[in-house]
Length: 238
Image 1 (cartoon, one colour):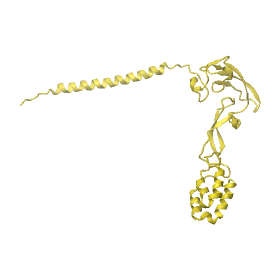
Image 2 (cartoon, rainbow, N blue to C red; image 1 turned 180 degrees about the vertical axis):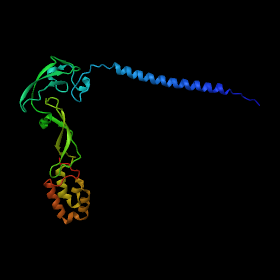
Image 3 (cartoon, rainbow, N blue to C red; image 1 turned 60 degrees about the vertical axis):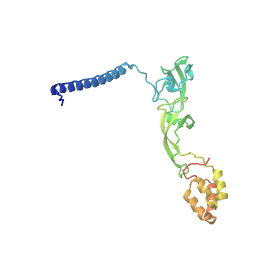
């Protein structure tokens, strides 16, 4: 029988050496990643260009056409020095400068005219709002919801170009008033008009009561013709 003699001290020394080498390799990799990160951070130029709110660097992000006449550029491609002490509604001239990263033809310093008003005071056709479909368009009194609105690029105004506004709930989901009225007149006794508008419970009631013996059918014809009865989801007719 062969016996193997193991030097315990030598074995422990070998294990300790392997462990120490692996620990040193992990530490070196960690220090290398930290050094690389610091080098990237230090390589970033300190002289940054300040743009208007929500403006990103680069022509493709700014959506500014390259090699276009500077006089035809609008925000956010340009920034203007505006006097907030102007009289509301008066027309005033402002000096605008093209952003450094925007390429255009002609003088980069422009003179533009604008009305003295804040962006939230612009007309409805001069800004675009985010429409929502989670409200009741047929509610009485009329329902409103709060949403974000952004001024069109060709409009100059004071303050933030994106603002909150209370907008009347006015959306449609494809229900036609003419279709609902025809169904109410022809098949209203079977609840077809209610089923079409999404009022399932009332539709089942009309179906099994034969339109409330005709009374319910007549009432629904009048309600739909007057636009008083609309879709169940709160949308408007188209």
